[in-house]
Image 1 (tube, rainbow, N blue to C red):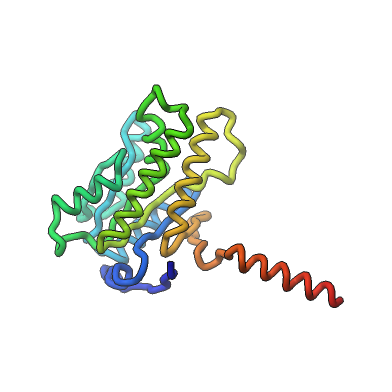
Image 2 (image 1 turned 120 degrees about the vertical axis):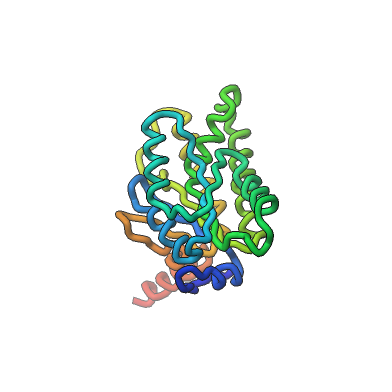
Length: 230
């Protein structure tokens, strides 16, 4: 897939939706600025024509406060779809049932994959420790999101946590969550037009900095040849 570097004008996502690829992944740790960056990017691309997809569920007061904070931080003009599971299918249904082709929002912002994976793990207590089944369900959720980006004339921005850089979780479920989210992030990054890694509020273009195995091998071989001549 070709990686686009087009910078569209504010409120105009035509450049993003007409090029090959229509998916941007924004990764980062806790309080890294990933949601703020994704919202600013969505506003620049789509203006007020943005569909915000929320995966959070208010299980307690602390989570409700987080949800309320996110609501205040985004434009009141944006459409909102609350979907905790089967998110790709929910978006597809929303686009087909609630909107004509002309009214399809040019930008969809999903925040976030981290909570979607958590929702999958908490959905069925009897099977919550069946690693193979949970992996199948997470892959299915991510595949459905990729289908949205592929089959609809809209730019999909997905926010997700980068949780693999810390210590190994003490408990098995924590390790499984880390593994499933890392797997989902890799699925998305493999097909995304752009992937950004947020560090202290700064966006690093991981796609532009990435290197293929072939390029890495060529560099190693070239370096070895130079050293052998010395």
